[in-house]
Image (cartoon, rainbow, N blue to C red):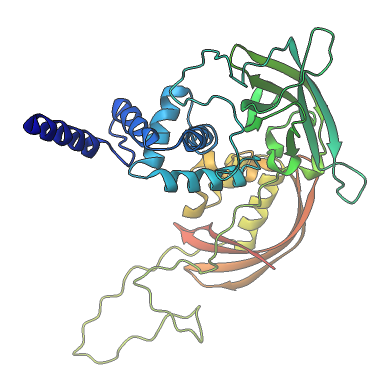
Length: 399
């Protein structure tokens, strides 16, 4: 009998020792098994809060498409972490996303299960009975000229008569998608815990100006309950074009003029080659002088700015040999490159310095983008001699 009792105690000890106290994300099976082990060691209230934390991290803490990919991303995020670490991480994600949730607050999100068990339960707060979804979209903010800087988008679950449905203690996943001319511009998520949900504050400064057509956007909001996902769209919402996101013109942090590394130039007289030795015992080899450009380097800068202004971006790109501008596709990008420019008005171009290998040109001009916003720029262009032609090799915007 004593031997049997000893074996029973030993078996229980071995079973307890095999239970994991941290996440094992080797695969989906070990992820679920380790989370189940961790959950089983918690009190009932702690179990609920732990499941809520995992849901917060899976929904808002990772970027992935579909439940399977979200689980994989979640596994990488929490692999090796213990319960307190996961709760702390969920608090940080909730705060960052403006979600009214905390690991120390009472349970508030209904039945949460990150492994996809969406079957309605008798006490499932997410099984909200509704007929449809309505959206209220109101302009907010002021750019100083009386125009809005954002849109407040508030969804409401309503019954068949259009009246808001009353519910509380839910954790409904609400998603906002923003489009213009059929192209998706952004996606945002939040938790709808009751029908007093504050919604989404869509700032115009988060929307790329180059992707907005006719200064209008379309929005779609979806709210996922246990039994159904409700969707509603609004088409043709006006935006304030002056408040949209406009990229800064490409620039480099160098004004250095690229020179032949083998060239030796007298800093006091850069246009005159250094004197050669007169010692007859010394044999010197004079390298062939590079072909000197006949044109003034500012002509190249003038051609570049004129080509950008007329949107002949291929001609503009051909005047350069600047690694910082990358490929032609990067150079002409309508969002982050010179493709966003509508017009250039040149005020002044002067040659700052010049020698057979390199030159520096200063230019002052106004740039107007495709949304009508004008910016005054003072730019230093570095140029280098490429087979007798001046090519722009660097570009710096000055204060």
